[in-house]
Image (cartoon, rainbow, N blue to C red; front, side, top):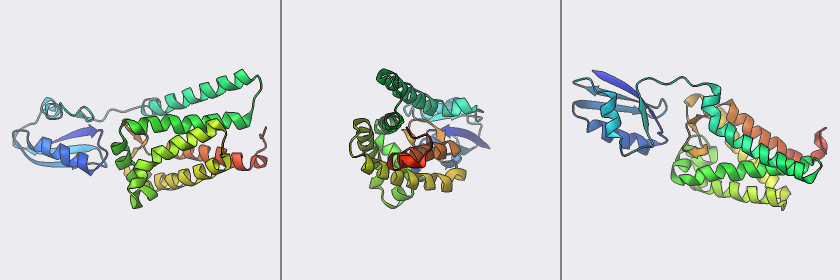
Length: 236
């Protein structure tokens, strides 16, 4: 008898190994197949293994959530964490424009970019190891140089500081274009593999999708505008 369960929270091969060991310890289980890409586990047993037993096996590992059937999520439910962060960034950037008394596209975009980098790096630092592992699944540079996954949040912090301080903006814009272009290529190449997007760290199960690409391209466009403002008709 084979029981299939959906597992959320898996980000790497070590997760697969850890869960496999836990499931094999359940009485009656004879074979286990944990699939990272599909976020599921097949448990072969000589009896029916209940959901409660599987949950009990992971009771001290709250990172992983088990369900018998995948819950259909709306667009808002899927991307709620990301949309919430971007909404806060937009609100604070707009509030500063109101404080100035006049709209400055240059400052507005700098503050949007600063909020983007600082805000998203915060979530990555909550579990840096898991982020680095998840990032390696799709970022081309992180796949070739493992340390890049650990360095990336620090790059975001530096970029956020430079944009909000208004210092070394040419360097900041060029670096933004480079790192996000690399990441965007990786996202495009791996969208069909059902990997988790690591933009908010490993704590949220946000899939790689066109939303990730649009997010990156928007930042790249703002960085290009920062270097060549004359290219855009809305330059102010």
